[in-house]
Image (tube, rainbow, N blue to C red; front, side, top):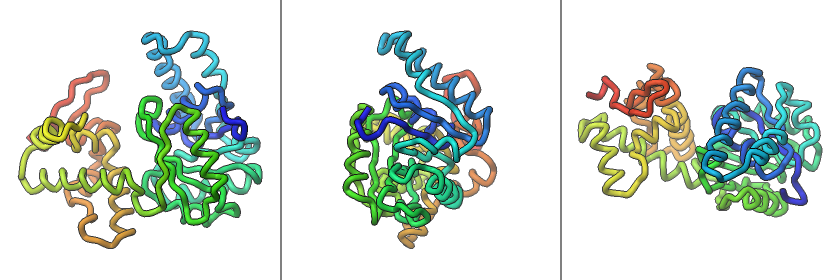
Length: 299
């Protein structure tokens, strides 16, 4: 752990939150994982334990290291007490502007005055989030990639008022986790999603216009562009609701028609076809099966 940060609170126990808690705990930070749902917290700890078991099986860590990692994590359903002694809070709640602003107001009120408030947002303005706090110089974006324990990148987003001290501490903490932090400035979508989401949206437009089928589009990008996963399968993995939310942030932020989300994406989200999380998107996912088949809607 870094000398300046030792106690970390993670807000949100979903996929990203449990992954962030996992990597901090493995590096011996004291982690409080906070969520309003006790069931979500239990599921998150079980997921972390399962992921650690995989690492033990691959001989990447020992049983003792697994036990130590789990012992570094405590859970809490009360945000005020969860952040009361932290050096760093990482918010990893749903990608919803009003929800995040509300959480940051509470974090600002209850966290120690010198604590850094970070957000794992993938597209929402850091400057806008910082503006609802009394410590904008200590607010920063810390955008981890999914799956967090595996992916090396942390996109570190500097808001308008983020201080050099805050930036340096987050860059150091990210490196301490074994990640590669990359500094970017606060514009809609930052770098990762400003480039990725229009590509995914264009793939959906290509499907919508009948240029090619689901598997054909993904095959072209995998074999022709050396992408490990095709854009439509990646959209399912991210969540089509998340993709739509980010496209709307880009569209609202730039006002350029090229960022308008494809009508097919809008309709699929409205119909509840959100990808892997809902069991069906461009592909269909059977629980417990690794087989991926094209959704009946696109055959």
